[in-house]
Amino acid sequence: MLPSGQQQACTALSYPLLSRPFSLPAFKMSVVTVPTTPFSGQKPGTSGLRKKVKVFQQKNYTENFIQATFTAMPGGSEGTTIVVGGDGRFYSPEVSQTILRLAAGNGVKHVVIGQDTILSTPAVSALVRSLKADGAILLTASHNPGGPENDFGIKFNISNGGPAPEDVTNKIYAVTEDIKEYKTVELPDLDLSKTGEFTHGPLKVTIVDSVSNYLQLLQEIFDFDMIKKWLHETSPKPSVLFDALNGVTGPYGRAIFVEALGLPESSIQNCTPLPDFGGLHPDPNLTYAHTLVERVEKENIEFGAASDGDGDRNMIYGKGAFVTPSDSVAIIADWAEEAIPYFKGGVKGLARSMPTSGAIDIVAKARGLECFEVPTGWKFFGNLMDAGRLSICGEESFGTGSDHIREKDGVWAVVAWMSILAKANQTKPGTDINAILLAHYKKYGRSFFSRYDYEEVASEGAEAMMAHLRETFASSSFAGSAHKATSSDASFTVAAADDFAYTDPIDGSVSTKQGLRIMFTDGSRIIFRLSGTGSSGATVRLYVEKYSRNEAEYADDAQVGLKPLIEVALQLSKLQEYTKRDKPNVIT
Ligand code: G16
Image (cartoon, rainbow, N blue to C red; front, side):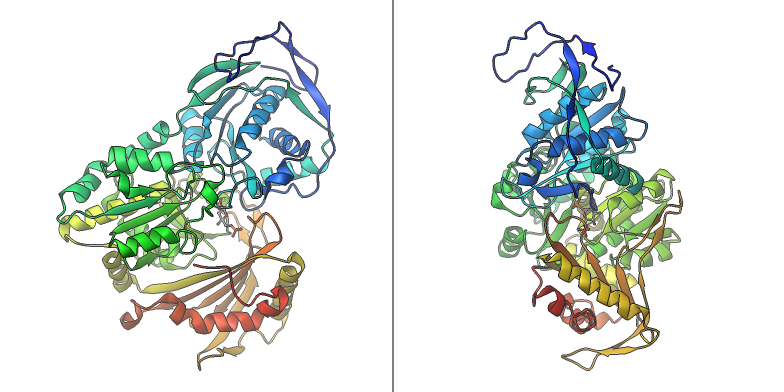
């Protein structure tokens, strides 16, 4: 291990897997301190630093951020083991080598890295936990498009396997603001295409198969035999389609759905990770996963599912039945003990992000479980899980997961839904996704939910709209005021309005300004937030929710029922005026 901060010699030299012929001269590998200057705006957002590739390609830009990450690592980077993985997007190969050099320069002892740097975000979290590593660096901009003109991202996870909490990301940002040098060792590129253990300068590097550790974890969590029975012994056999959108879950999809569950090759699509996702926008929603939706409808497929670029998001879609992420997590929570062996001992608690619908709260209440409402961002669930108070949680942004790891987990959610269907079919053959949804609504009522995204609007306009709403909230006459829809007589009376703030029940940390909420007297809600994951401009998110116990409405299209609320939201925010957009880019 190298003491950092000074020129330090080290010998070390075996390169069994260099991609090009290389004969190593007999020189000493030293830590080199390279002078640099800060770049503005290296502030990690909801989940890491996401910018255009071209921004990361600027000289020293990536090095600065990685150095800041090592400097800010809780406990320091000296002597540590870190996991490195990502979704294989454009520019990952170059950045992986940069990480190895800076890791060596910062005294890291052992780097565990995915073959060709490929490891899904959940697989990284699982590896950090099973290896008891000190942290991880993930190369991903998640669901954002990839390629030379698109996005790249770097995220740091801590030793529990979860995204770094705000005190750490704030520290990373503070270091980037004042950085003067980074520490590196001038190592040649290491061939990352073959698994094995290597000595790379002062580092031990283990290149791991991308899938095996994660697959083993899922096999411990779920009853694969029960799922196989449903898939192969039901008559007629249910058909399945999994779409990896050319993101990282391709190899996982093939290993799980084709190899482990015995489904035909035709039940997976877009399953080769590509640096530009084949031009797809790897975001599993009705807009960007439309080929999945079309095939499910046209070919009468019972079970469709998609995952995003880095494998932490999911969408569940059966014929004629889109499962909103808010419903998805509530239904998984309700079935967990019955259908998923991992939860046989009992579910500890449930949680959702603030904009996510309250469907899961209703399940929690019925089952006598604690339920937490946290700000948007998976990092807010970690403390609750570590404290043993949270088992299952989800976000409206197509994130669902449990305390098996500390990231949301797209493939886990897909297998959870297969488990629910397999279980339900044991007693009621022919049960499909639609039947599961309707049964849930009958039991608990339905929370209609939708999100409108206005992507890449001018930041000034978006900020001005938020300021206008804050001003509106401050008026003493706002609570109690009534607001009428434009296309109907529907009217909503404001019960309360606030800027959501959260005090972490475990460590007492406070996060303010997490979204503007308007709660109405009938239980409906409107929420406005600016996304923390965009790479340029601002993305306004408008969330609307309405709860119904009227059975006649359960099969309705959510957009119809939510229209009056959306109209009120647009009036109150003057969104169209401030953003100059009359339509959202994406509706989910
Ligand atoms: C990230 C976070 C999620 C968050 C989502 C959307 O997801 O991990 O917790 O809900 O962004 O955030 P925002 O609304 O700020 O854009 P991912 O899949 O992009 O890593």
